[in-house]
Length: 245
Ligand SMILES: Nc1ncnc2c1ncn2[C@@H]1O[C@H](COP(=O)(O)OP(=O)(O)OP(=O)(O)O)[C@@H](O)[C@H]1O
Ligand SMILES: [Mg+2]
Image (cartoon, rainbow, N blue to C red; front, side, top):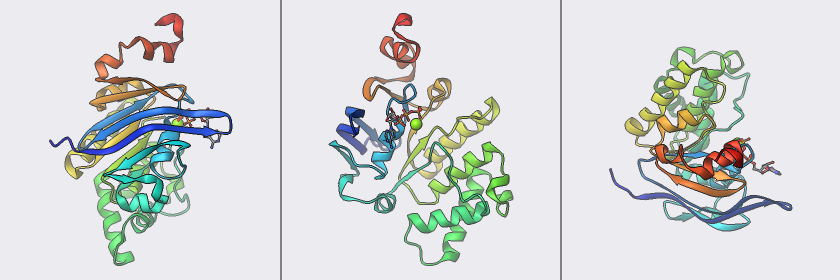
């Protein structure tokens, strides 16, 4: 597996008024990796994804994707470059069917010749995530685990080289989590997509990620192999309070 750099951030800082959501964060994701991003509530994880996908701009610092400085691009252009993402709060078009939702994403993310081509691509993507039997079901009727899969399908249909997953395990039961972990490995191995994933469920992040980066109050407080992160004093202190470290 090559170790070409896909995503890189240097000194990434984001202020909301007087509040610094991110403070001087350096990070990188290499081709073919599954990298985890963990940290307590409000530590800046989703904000970092908002910067990478172009929904917000860093106050200071720089993010590059395959050598492109992302400050020069708008969200749809970043999608065209090959960054796909899911949202922590799933946001499908609830009244539309799963197929219609994924078709819309295919049209948004790729320069396809026709709606027919987008729909073809959407059907393949639904098959990949295991939802093709539900293609004509309105999304509002789906159980949460299927809504999460649909969210992943919508991101995949944009044709990403890098997939950003924001807490896709949240609210799932243990069996559903195992299914989602398997899906993430298939995305990396069968579709050759690099994965950068936010996870709150530490155990799930440990099982899925080969490298984990930890945010605490907007700063990077640790980075390394899952087994080392699980024992890291600064990480335990951030999650449990200084008394436990
Ligand atoms: N649009 C916004 N306007 C103002 N403050 C914001 C905005 N988005 C996030 N914040 C603040 O920035 C900080 C980081 O939030 P962020 O959502 O990135 O955290 P997170 O690590 O994803 O948390 P969680 O685990 O709860 O999802 C928090 O203090 C949050 O209140
Ligand atoms: Mg978040």
